[in-house]
Length: 335
Ligand SMILES: NC(=O)c1ccc[n+]([C@@H]2O[C@H](COP(=O)([O-])OP(=O)(O)OC[C@H]3O[C@@H](n4cnc5c(N)ncnc54)[C@H](O)[C@@H]3O)[C@@H](O)[C@H]2O)c1
Image 1 (cartoon, helix red, strand yellow):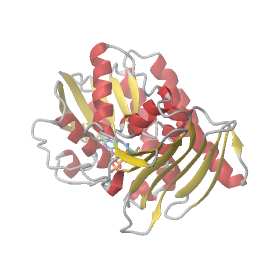
Image 2 (cartoon, rainbow, N blue to C red; image 1 turned 135 degrees about the vertical axis):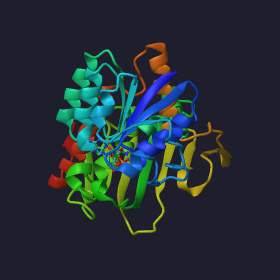
Image 3 (tube, rainbow, N blue to C red; image 1 turned 60 degrees about the horizontal axis):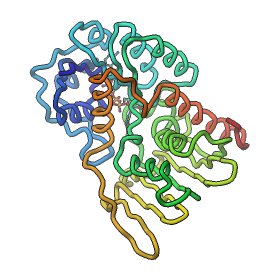
Image 4 (cartoon, helix red, strand yellow; image 1 turned 135 degrees about the horizontal axis):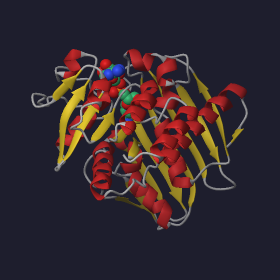
C-alpha cells in the first residue's frame, strides 16, 4: 500500500485525489494547501474536462498541513504528489527528492528550461523516482495514437493537426502570466509534449501567437518542422470567449488511414479507411488515472518510469520556449 501526500488541493490536486480513490493498493494519507477550505475538502475547484475534479471526497482520515514543506517532512509518506503553481515545482520537487521520497510533479515540469535541467540532474542522483504528469502520454486515444505511429500499422504519418482551445480558466494563477507562462506553457505544452514524444524532436518550430488574458502568449499556432514529412501543426490557447467549450482534438493522416478524435464532442475516436468509418475501442478513464497507475506500478516494481523521463519533460519546456522566441522574432527557431 503506497502512502501518498498531495501538495496543492486546487483543481489538479483535487483531480489527482479523485484518481487515487479509484486505485487499489494506494492510500492518500495527507494533503497540504495554504487555503483552509481546500485542505479541509470544502471547496470544489472544477475542471475543464467533464468528470475532472469532482470533489465530494471524505478528507476526515487525512493529516492536513497548511504549508507544503510540512507535508514533505512527514516521515510516513512515500510518494509526494506536487500540484502546486508552476514556479513552485522546482523547489518542492527538490525538497521531496532530498527527503528520499518518490515525486509526481504536475506539468509543466518547471517554469523554464534552466530549472528543468537542474531538477532532472538532482533526480538522476536521487533514490526516489521522479515523474512529470504529462497526462496526454497516458490518455486513451492519445496512447493509441502513439502505438499506431510507432508500429506503423497504417503506414507512415503524412500529416497531423492537434488542437486544444478553451476560454480562460480564471483565478489568480492563470491570470498571472509570469507565474503560469500563458496558455502556451500551461495548456498548449500538452500538444508540444505529445508531438515530440510521438514524432521525435522537430528540427525547428515556426509559431504565431498573441496575448489576451495575461502578459504572455495566450493563443498560439505552431508548425513543427521535420526534414520532410510529417507535416505537424498544433493550435492551443485559452483566448476563446467565456462560455466557449473546451476542445481537445486531433486529426492524423497516415498513408492508409485517417484518425479523428474530438474528446469534447462526445464522439468515439474514429478511424477512416477505404471510404468507411469505424469507432476505435479505448480503455475507460482519463489520462490522470492511467498516469498515476503507471507511476505507482513503477514504484511497486522499483523500476524507473520510461514513458516520461525528466529529460523529455524538460525538452517540452524547451520547445515551448522556442515557440515563444519564434513569435517574438517572426522567424522559425532551430532546435
Ligand atoms: N495535467 C493537466 O492537465 C493540468 C491541468 C491544469 C493544471 N495543471 C498544472 O497543475 C498545477 C496546479 O494547477 P491548479 O489549477 O491546480 O492550480 P490552483 O491554483 O487551482 O491550485 C494550486 C494550489 O496550491 C496551493 N498552494 C500554493 N502554495 C502552497 C504552499 N506553499 N503550500 C501548500 N499549498 C500551496 C494554493 O493555495 C492552491 O490551492 C500547475 O502547474 C498547472 O499548470 C495541470
